[in-house]
Image 1 (cartoon, rainbow, N blue to C red):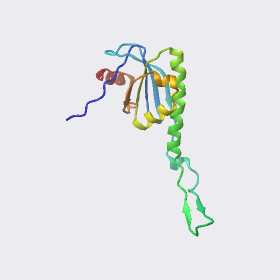
Image 2 (cartoon, rainbow, N blue to C red):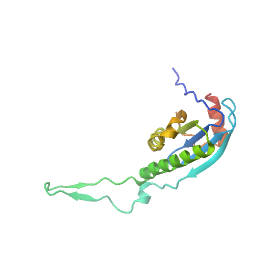
Image 3 (spheres, one colour):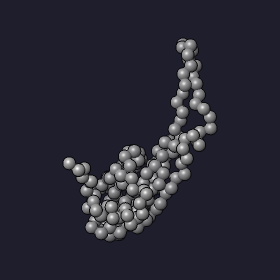
Image 4 (cartoon, rainbow, N blue to C red):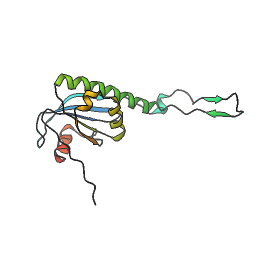
Amino acid sequence: MPKKEPYIRLPHRAVVFVGDGSKALILLNEGDGLKPHLVVQQAFEDENPPTHEQGSDKPGRALSATEPNRSAMEQMDWHDIEKHRFARTVAGALDRLLGELQTERLVIVAPPRTLADLRRSLSPTVQKSIVAELAKDLTGLSVNDISQYLAARS
């Protein structure tokens, strides 16, 4: 049986967040659910090079007073840490923008890990305004293609 895509409800004046760990768009639907017209409100792009370009040294080693052996410490994943920080940054911007636009409807489209980071970072007020979530990465699409993709899901 083919996997069915989830239904997305995209009301008029709903804010649509499309993002991943390094890019994000906050859009406003000036159309309706059947014919969305998404207008860019804010765009974010984070420069996040791979960990090996960010780290400056080898991971350390620990020596225990009770054990004769040394143990290696795990290398910090700076790339992953920056993705989490970026999610917190855009969550704060989303909170402010929802207040400015005076809308209480939010649709979030993000890959599963980014979606989880956003859920942890959003304020309770913003969490109550979520009308739909889609665990999908659409950051590589144009605004027009995002509109068409979401219109096909309504």
